[in-house]
Image 1 (tube, rainbow, N blue to C red):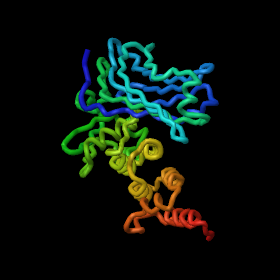
Image 2 (spheres, rainbow, N blue to C red; image 1 turned 135 degrees about the vertical axis):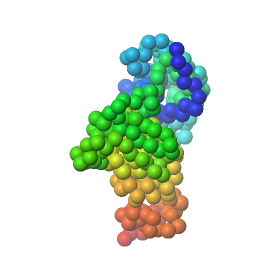
Image 3 (cartoon, one colour; image 1 turned 90 degrees about the vertical axis):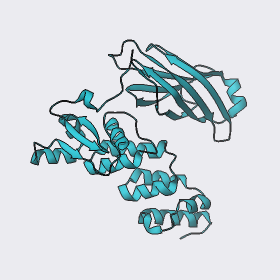
Length: 298
């Protein structure tokens, strides 16, 4: 059984659960595994579990690590738990919470919507091979991407199905098989290819590099995954997110940022020293919002 046990990034699963609903599920795909955070309300209880789905060809495997679970309400109620987990069967569940409604009311009062977050860390995976773009999967017909002297190999059909740029090049230059990605980081290329493969690989350190590659190769799917990450998971400051909005024309991120800036102080902290770094429509929206917060009208 092969083991991958070093330098695995943490996995963060988030959701907002309405206590008037019966069930909610947040899914992510990472390291070739589908991770599910499931919250539910059976009768007078609140339950929260973590579940995994491994590739069908995985036989003898094991996944273990640590979990940090946080549940918070808008009114300030908070519940935190730390626990270890170990899975070696598709039927395994890690029960994070199964509390009586009365106990929950003591912490969260009458709040109906709860912010739920589970962080998977210290992760060790055995018997499940990670997605690879190295020489171990190379075929004679593959495209080769070079970044920081590291080679990545992808099949033409896979790459062309995602990239408008590759499709156009391939029509004109059918023998094109090599891209020298000068100035690109290998870690960004790895994350970009993993994202195209369906992995949730975007993080704060790679999102700009993946956006660069998504723009260069014209891959709408990677763009959308970066936008979803920035809106729902990123810890990047609003100021820097708004710079990305202008550079990559991220409309959904723009709307999300503006909606999250609700005080004069928050708006001020999001403004760059040089206002030309902001998209003009963003600047206009923030100015209008600031005036409104001061109790004035335009």
